[in-house]
Length: 445
Image (cartoon, rainbow, N blue to C red):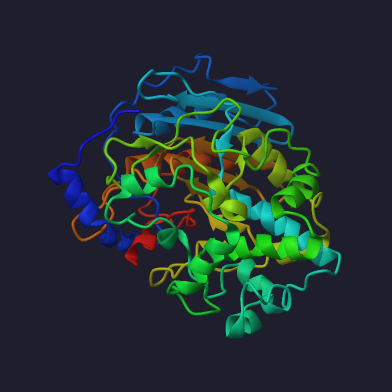
């Protein structure tokens, strides 16, 4: 991967990183066409696969191909997606997996799914709820007093961990010292570092919370604690328990917690820009994911994600009572005056109103260089999942305000049309999407 020496332009961007906080819950800020982006393949290119395409299908391959191409043409290096409607499936890919060689992306790539891991972790915890080993409304200190001691251990419940209302801070910035002053060095230094989950919890508990207990404030620390809670009540490593009781139960063949810093299956390079502080964007596809653990370390494919959410929402992984708890939501953002809350967060699952007016269930995820988004209708019939390989492409002005965002708008248009089956709507400004594993507002502290 190419290296670059800091220049005055990059230094100014780094100095302004703290101002990016004003972007809050929005991941739709902008950037020009990234350097090295290749031309989009045509509809007949080998990156596209149509399965069970027939006149009776409600899928529109031509529209899906055009919208995925538009996402790449807007500046995304490469993207791959799977869309389903009942028994019909379409898979497509557009762009490049390597900006230097031009190697094309493929629909079957394995991909780091980031915070979508949280849905899997939540399912595992709710399975223990069904067995009577965990009470959602019991204090965390009843289970892991040595991990969350004192008042927080007594007042933070298991439910508060899973819906991010615990008032516990995120550990990301403390875990990557120097991220605000020299981002590339901070990420490079952490590439092969092992971070025990107990250390991540310690860092999160010591950091200043972004919101009081009882208010939704996304923090990865919550799901690291949830993983250690699983370990305490099951006697198994949480990754092993989730693999055996969630991944295998769902019949997923290409979903796993990585055993090393490398992804063994076919995959793309994963480019991180950190809002322009790393220029050109740098490949972090090789990375020790102990820093993410049960909050965001998993690898999957877009087909597997659609399988997972269809079985989850169809009641195949949880009982009716536990699925009902999972879908009990809290507001995930403060709406503008006169506007409704467009994003509500449950237990490792959110519901989001898209520009076309439909409400969908799912989650998104983002780690260094890899973004993922999976949405489904409530009955699990219509689904769309997309992975892409350039992260934090958004750009901001001197005051930290988001600039126009053709990449983000193309992403939302693609997903809106893919999951609704209707022509994609124009994105009317910022869409309140969920926080990713590392989001702009985390830079405010």
